[in-house]
Length: 135
Image (cartoon, rainbow, N blue to C red; front, side, top):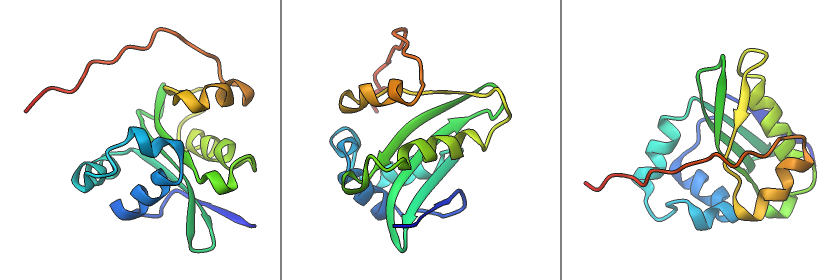
């Protein structure tokens, strides 16, 4: 398998929903709401994709000022090809889109908590969430 990483490949909501459903993130993302998924893609600052031929096998979706901090909102790698370094490479490609010294911050999905420490990220417990407003 030869994986190609791209930062210029536009994704359709259907493609994004498909990759999310092939990962543990599908259970925690609005995969039944195509409009929200379209907005998530349209407003991401950094979108790195991993392709095995024509098949999307991974994606990293982030928000960044590209100088101080990048918030990695979604890291999704098809469960059929995990443990091959694709997630690590998606993070590295995301980091390459910002200035040296720009940190990456994320909230780990419960199933992935041990992964991030394994690749050198440091845990923090200071995260907070404000639920979305109604209306």
